Image (cartoon, rainbow, N blue to C red):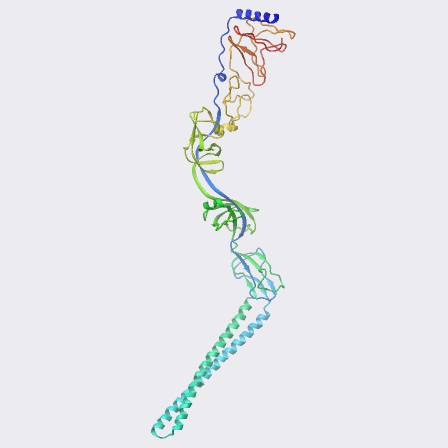
Length: 508
């Protein structure tokens, strides 16, 4: 207790000797909170797109299967392999034609016989017509004689019967010609069938295209059933058979651009050719067909994925992170004259980190890029352009990481240099304050008071700044690392005002 009284008396004596110290001016950072720094970007006109994802497989637009048209004949030659491009009418394979060649010769002979029958029938018609003419003449002569009384009635009756028989023979000859002509037509048809079968022994490509599969083997017998001998892609045209989610089907139109990535090939641009006619009730996906350009690298069965561009336009856009959404709707934070203006907007398409603004923001207005939810209308801020923010240092004394938009104000007595980062490797500067002379130090065995009024106070260091006091109340100025009092390395010192109680730090 006696030690405390002696110390108090020494402090009062020192205060009377030196006089009252001028009041310290408050530091700028302690006097008022620093406005938070935010990253802003201007609303600009940019292209935005709406795309629908899809995936699927490359298939033939029109697949052609080639079967033999005559069965039971041996394959004797092959003219195409899988992967070959063929033209319409090109020979793909050849069948044995010995049997069909004999059948054709037989049909040709039958046709010749039928032709001869027609000629014979025509001759019979001519003969019957001549007999009919003779019978008619004899009847007319008999009738004249009978009228003159020069012949008997029996002779007249015989002439009438002969004329009727001649009429019947002429009619029969005419019908015989019709029969002969029908037989000739039948023989001609049989000959044509035999010729057609003969021609079918050569299997030809029905269309221009590419051979994708060959099942024909030399020596095998042709059969109407089973696998096709050849499978072709008509015109070699491939397309993508893709699947699209049902919620995007209403946005699809024929002719829309499709950007695809084909496995092993790369980027391929196509267009929508056919829209889904139905939706799979299990997968909830619709099947869409994408027309592809001619490319020899494309093969049926390759996997492909990509997007269909359903909309493309130029519009006012802001960074996607600038658009906030809550129960009241969508809004953005506008920075005008260093003040936040919360403004509702009508947001549209989202494209490559940008969000379309259909209404509420004009081109060129500055919007808060990130952390806008921490502000309200009227809040003061320090705006930093996005490109400048990314170039600012991320560490160091008093520096702020602008990429994260740290929001908040510096508290009194804290770090007051948030907005402007100091030069690299430079110590943090503190606002100047009027301090009273610091006390001298005693040896480590016991603390002592400073009795000389003109002793200079040690300067604040980066690691351990000194304690300073005003005339009315003690105040401590400390660095961000470790606060300390103005004292020597041996023993702590005290600093007190003229009016307030002594302040002691450390053990006596």
